Image 1: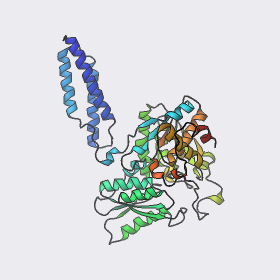
Image 2 (image 1 turned 60 degrees about the horizontal axis):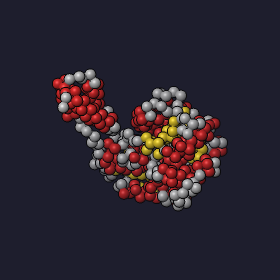
Image 3 (image 1 turned 120 degrees about the vertical axis):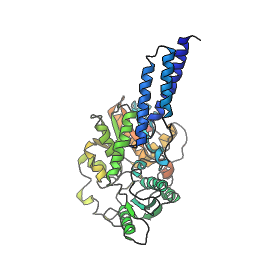
Image 4 (image 1 turned 45 degrees about the vertical axis):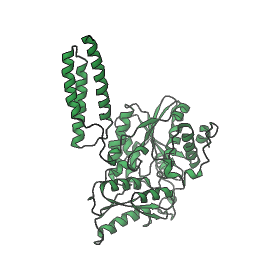
Amino acid sequence: MPDHTKLYVAGVFMLGAVLTVLYRAQNQHADDSEEDRDGKRSSKQLQQLLATLSNVNDLDALKKRLAEVGQTLEKMDGNIREGVEGCIGNTPLIKIKSLSEATGCEILAKAEFLNGAGNSPKDRVALKKGLLVPHSGDTIYEGTVGSTGISLAAICRARGYKAHICMPNDMAVEKSDLLLKLGAEVERVRPAPIVDQNQFVNLARKRAKEHTENPEKPGRGLFADQFETEANWRAHFTGTGPEIYEQTAGRLDAFISGAGTGGTISGVAMSLKSRIPNLKVVLADPQGSGLFNKVKYGVMFDSKEREGTRRRHQVDTIVEGIGINRVTHNFEVGRELIDDAIRVKDEQAIGMARWLVENDGIFVGSSSAVNCVAATQLAKQLGPGHRIVTLLCDSGARHLSKFWANTEPIGGTEQDVSLENILNP
């Protein structure tokens, strides 16, 4: 075989090998550890060596370059994740084909249900809770409607902590069942406004204090405080937002998401708008929530309706995980960056959940369905040719007994669900 042919074959082979390694290196979960910085340096060296290969014009020089690449490859660890915590973040961004074709826009969804611990965006926040001593009896207490608790329970189990979750008793029962299987203690309490000391968030705070003050109970209690903690929005400012920017190569017209604690939409908005100033950030809000009015008109509702003046649960919806009638710190830090809001009715969310199964094989929960309704409505407003990103938060498997219980069986025919009827019920 002539030397130039050998050179060509060897070059092509090496190019494929190096590109494969670079792709794997870029898709590894990254944090600020020394090992990650070493990995990034090795990746950079590989890129530089790859660039020099294009200037090689004789076989001996190519052999020398290949030996250098081989030495660099030996220093890299491959793509092995460190425990279940290593499977959090860098979730894929997928195109929802049916909604994109129907609107003429590119509607993309960050598949946050593929986070590897609790299978929701709350994994990112739970990963930041590193303040306790493993296997000491130290316990994280949290008030949650489900997803944050599931993420905390999984991470606590992986790191040697305990978890105690307080949640409303009208949430889907499979969430509390899953929490129990993950080894968490679960208290289901009646729904109540935040002024009630037995409201689920207040109760979790109280339980953490009681644990710490009890000399007979091992370890101490830490109240996670997902609604107010800075770790919430920061997890999305440093993780979710930059990932979306990289995955879209900065080509993005709008981001739309619901809000419960407000950490996701605030963190992502602050991250993306610093890079894409003209980005439109839109809130997707279920019926019964006051955030829609807060964004649109600057007030939650009439003063007679504000939380604390009534003694009942105020968010009247079957949607779980998003929607609230008070302004949290996590929502407030990014509120000025939210440009608009879209309200979604329960029947629209149910219809969209069925549509996604029938047309895309995507099985999601209630908050994801709300996000997709709002993303589709936004696409109609903006017109064809725009790129919109939203979130798929969790699987429909957590919503079978409540949200999905209200849906008709999937028929599998095109006439079963009409997108027009979903958007205009």
